[in-house]
Image 1 (tube, one colour):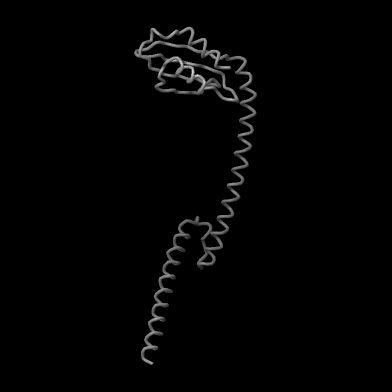
Image 2: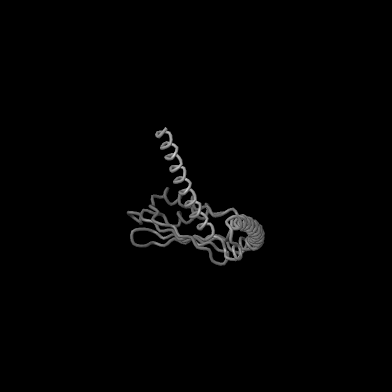
Length: 177
């Protein structure tokens, strides 16, 4: 009988220790949750269940705020898209694309200005033409200023005299709509 009593005592002690650890973990988790809640949600609330309910309310409020902000973002994007398409179409008519090529030490600098377009700018086609002409593209920088896209492309070439600058300018102008 002594063996069975000590076994049951060991089980009780183990159960008590496990329960104590569980309560400690719950206490730590509760403190962490409480620290994440804004003061107005926990003010005057003392019990753990009140804090849990307020955490649920806080999450619901955050979801509502997210939905409101998402709707507002969508409205602003629609307004922006309509204003860009209105002003973008007029800037396309007023600002034709322009290509300027300058020689520099060891290569060329290609500068392209183009009116802002809904469908975008064919940068890949421009780079493709430059590579076909034997130029190594070092970098490409794009900037948007007053509905005009400016591209500056730095290239390297071993012999700039082998490049037909007017021909290259014509090819690039044809690639850009």
